[in-house]
Amino acid sequence: MGLNCFIILKDVTDGCESKDANRPECTEGYRMVPLHWCMLWLLLPLSSRTQKLPTRDEELFQMQIRDKAFFHDSSVIPDGAEISSYLFRDTPKRYFFVVEEDNTPLSVTVTPCDAPLEWKLSLQELPEEASGEGSGDPEPLDQQKQQIINEEGTELFSYKGNDVECFIASSSPSGLYQLELLSTEKDTHFKVYATTTPESDQPYPELPYDPRVDVTSLGRTTVTLAWKPSPTASVLKQPIQYCVVVSREHNFKSLCAVEAKLSADDAFMTAPKPGLDFSPFDFAHFGFASENSAKERSLLTKPSPKLGRHAHARPKADVQKVCIGNKNIFTVSDLKPDTQYYFDVFVANSDSNMSTAYLGTFARTKEEARQKTVELKDGKVTDVFVKRKGAKFLRFAPVPSHQKVTFFVHSCLDAVQIQVRRDGKLLLSQNVEGIRQFQLRGKPKAKYLIRLKGNKKGASMLKILATTRPSKQSFPSLPEDRRIKAFDKLRTCSSVTVAWLGTQERNKFCIYKKEVDDNYNEDQKKREQNQCLGPDTRKKSEKVLCKYFHSQNLQKAVTTETIKGLQPGKSYLLDVYVTAHGGHSVKYQSKVVKTRKFC
Image (cartoon, rainbow, N blue to C red; front, side, top):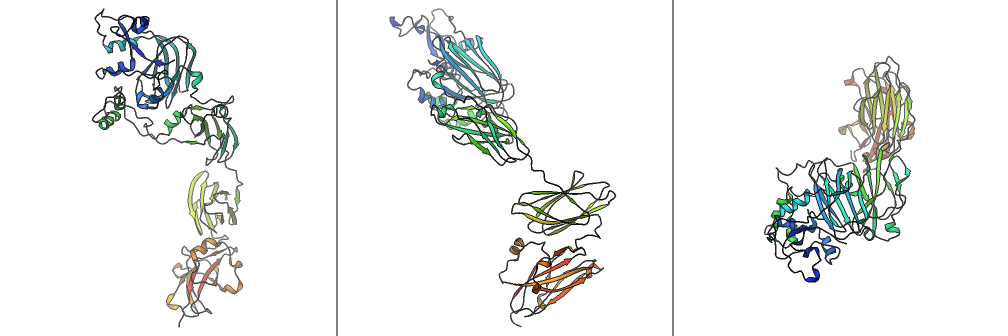
């Protein structure tokens, strides 16, 4: 049965043979005219050639359904095809179709996209009488159209919400049906599907008897989902694909709603300017070619500043969609720990692209493993190992009357990030490479939480010391500049002269040398070498000398040393270690020197 829409116009009974006398369109004074043409006549003069609306009985139906422009912004609902349209806020929209025979099955499905809808389906009574006795002139089309619209008819079904809702009747009376839709929240998009052959069409993929989406595995950053396959694929052998949607806001009722949410702006479907019922595509389909079709298209699809509503760009939604083919198990990765996510699965017909939603679910990822907090003791060095991208937490509880806290951090390998909080308040957040010293103002009875975070390159090793008495601690006092300076003019074929800075405190300095190749890459060596290794790891043959050194005048806290017994034209790696009274050693920046080849 076709869903055709007609309006009755008063006219003479041309072309009716005696055998057709009982047909409604051959009743005296009336003829049946498609409503789609009636709407077109409001804009254009009547053409001599009439094109009928597509019905299930016409061979051109499938071809016309594929031509989306045929039904663009039309008030006619085709039988057996899903249409997409739009609604302006607080502006109702009506669609019409005719059921030709009694006892006809009927199904109407409305899919809201990005806003709740109010819609109702009613059965209209077709006008039986017309004015103008025997004049042969049809009534004004505006008057006849208004006559149908003003008829409230019998309401069959109504709904308000954002669910995909369907009206189904196994036996419907013949007549004119009207579908009215309204959005009171905002401008929105929607889809409508109507058919008089719901049993054979089956446009939407079927759901299994258990349509739930199950969470089969839950981790800190991953969630594994599983669902039962759709009978459309397993039984009917129709091509389908599953699409998984992940959101941090809520579940979705339709794939149309997901696509609208994914749009960064309101351009999910271009809405024609209000008040225009047809686009240039409609005119071209009916044979009315436009001389400036491209220009007209741009004028019609670009809203006027006065009539069109302002489209404000929306921030991109925190929603992800991925279509995975016909697999019914999927692992979502790269999630945040201890975060709630909503998961939806849609099964879509690969040919028609019409979809059905499974019963979505939600889950909270596991929180990060609570690590044991290491207690720092005042003035004691603590060795810490941090995994790649991992984190370690340390706690320091000094005496209640402390006035300041000093942290010494010695990163042995790559840089590490340190954060210090005092009673929950962030005081320090920096990356540390090598050795750093931080001094913070104290607070009575305060507790300090230190968070050490590794980098992406690899694991991190470091030594950390916290103290309220910087003068009595295991780390040696260090100058800000820990470079070794070589004097080029004092180089000989067998010796080099170097200098480095000291401090006001008396410390032990030891210097070591090692012959290296001329192409030695000191930066690369630095990345590979553990900077926390002390002089006890060096060979005895590499030791040059050790001496104690300090100066109360920092400007004079400089020491020089001449290293003898070297080979001409050779490169040497020099290291200076300073050792505190507590025994902890810190290495200055390594220096590569080269003796003269000819003297």
